[in-house]
Image 1 (cartoon, helix red, strand yellow):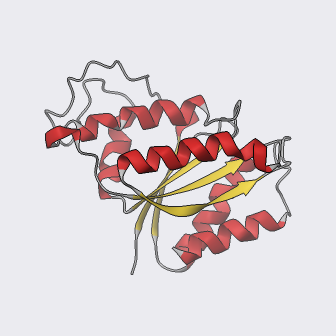
Image 2 (spheres, one colour):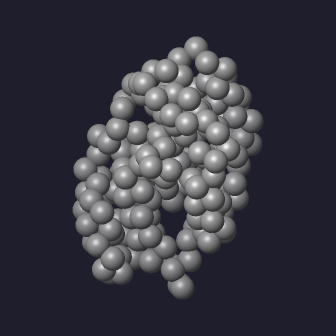
Length: 184
């Protein structure tokens, strides 16, 4: 069954390792008939959440701030699967991804009790380090986030040892990202 997938790409490098993971994942997902919409957050004008709790009055544009998120909200609502793609920055997600993800709260504000829409989620991440300890903090955050949102984890593709832009090129992890996209 075809799925609607959105990728929130938090990498600032458009030809970097995370972007290459996104490309491979997208090819795999499309090869089996999934629809994929990718948002390269670095190119978008997205402001941080104001914490005003004044969103939710307009379902089509739920946040009081009118910026690049207005493009993301409809795709997010329609998505079956949300892919979080990011380089690891100080053992966490990039600021670009965290800023956009925080702003998704405006969609929850449209629902009684601030109920988040139920989604499936996946993580694509590139990092300089490649030890289990290196991945632990970000994976703990990712799993805690999904637990609180009551989202289903579909898995992760973690490309370690790839600091320089493009270092992931030609590595087996790209085939893994392709297969992962095709497996959903």
